[in-house]
Image (cartoon, rainbow, N blue to C red):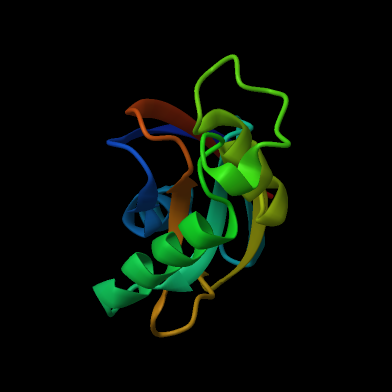
Length: 140
């Protein structure tokens, strides 16, 4: 059995947007027993994470860490950046996406995602402006 769908995840700027419930629903409705869910984001300035979904401080701390690690292109430490056509958040967004993941594999057993107790699936938006991101779920 192979099933596939595309989620559209609206973002309001940089941050983590959980979509665990949508992925869980897709797997349940597909009637999967044992399988692998592949999750793929169709963009180059956001990424995917499996991360804690219990304490909102985790999301805040991750966002703060990545802002410190890769500041906007108009920061003095980023004067080496050449790609600036789409604004000061664009090239840093590409760097953040390169440091993280654009694809995840999650095992499915007994029709359920095999995630840990506090794990959730997140789209990690690296751009400042709102976007509508496409995330492909492929169950095989």
